Image (cartoon, rainbow, N blue to C red):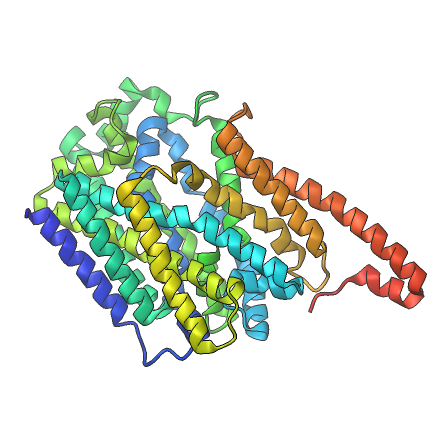
Length: 488
């Protein structure tokens, strides 16, 4: 057993131990397990809200996009700041509604605002289906990371099993507070690792960061501009930013709702919305490392392996182990949040048991089921959900119109127009993703939203006309009420 693997496994154990220490007494019900006592201050909420900033994509994907597509990778930088402009105004509204109506899931919001259990059920099912491939990405990504830094394929599989078991253990034991405890360490490790890597790797392979870009300018100048053609062209870049910003600003990712609902007051959310965009500065660092790979590695190198291959060649084994721990934390902590997000949707909005103890048992059981499915697919069919992963963000973005429509007291869309719009949007996303028609590299989620809004608007006009006709037949008072369609 080499030094790198030993350090990596020891680090995973430390991460899990911190998660287990997050528990405060016996968990009484699903509400407490999911959102604590709704008393998270600015610091705890900060690290929970920042959970989406650093995932396995930070270590595998960002440098890989820069390696193959150059500055097209910068799409990952602006969408978070853009989304937090929206979150500054939206998150406090959701927090107030959550306090008033006791939300603990995203589906609770849809169910209460539309006064429809069917709506809550559909949103919950969408959340589970579209988050499962994202969970598998974290677990499979962790195995790939350990395999790359150790050079041993079986050690990658072993690390996946160990990390999954440890993650499930601290999630079941501590709930949201366990995720918060581990998030502190994760973010510190990732930032420190990236700072060291962006200094050490360019220095080792090119003499320094400025030398990297001088050489790129001479040998690969096409990487310094977003091209007009190719897979990562300007259309892809712009629509990728747009769909990511829409998805984040309008809270379409169900596993990120607990962080908002658990805050102790609105000011916590507003302050964090101002400062959290600073986190995206860190994403510049793996992009720079990707450019280093463009001049140091064969162009046929797998993009996902670029950062860790350079790390293994440039740094001593013990520090490669530290990087592996940082990468493991960037998989385990989001995986924990994803398990929580899916299990609470199942226990609260799909199975619907009224007994608090039974509800918690269903929730805990699905944590094990979700993690187990993701692990088995990661071990046996690591590419089985590769195409479905493309649907995750584009598919969940189809919740945005329905979310916005009932954010204020006046309902802009009724239940059935929203459901029909979501169905149309998901169908378009599915068709574009799998059938691959020529759409000029426009993100499938954007095309889905166009169809979604168009269908919902037409359906709403029909609904409005039928409601007015029905109300007119019943009398003027009912007709006036139908015009307003208030939401509680």
